[in-house]
Length: 180
Image (cartoon, rainbow, N blue to C red):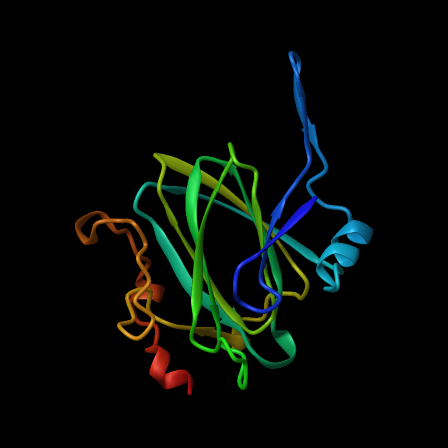
């Protein structure tokens, strides 16, 4: 596996080593030992989640707070998404900064999103199946979030506003400024 820095401390892109031949391909999508050696992060994932979405869906920006904070290892099984991570760790030199990376079934890239980050994605293909591992269990009372179109963050989701599909829950999230 190859690690690519993102400019946000501890948030990295992971490129797996893929073995292809006329029959198809094989790759190891996760190996705890290798993950920990290469990233320096704990690979104790306890929950796997998967979602299916159509073009224009924007999910996020979400996180869990306090003792329920989650790190995520995300990838796309079908289609393509623009994955976004925002550093909200108090005192971090990259606080309020975000990265966007295209993840797809074709490029097989993964993004490691550490605890203390908001996370979201937009669907760029007709449909997408999104898969992620979490290092902590979901706890509804610990949910925090920021509007996908927050002016301070200025994330380009690569979806025209007229085509964006946002959940009612995500439409009432707070501003980034309210996190401070």
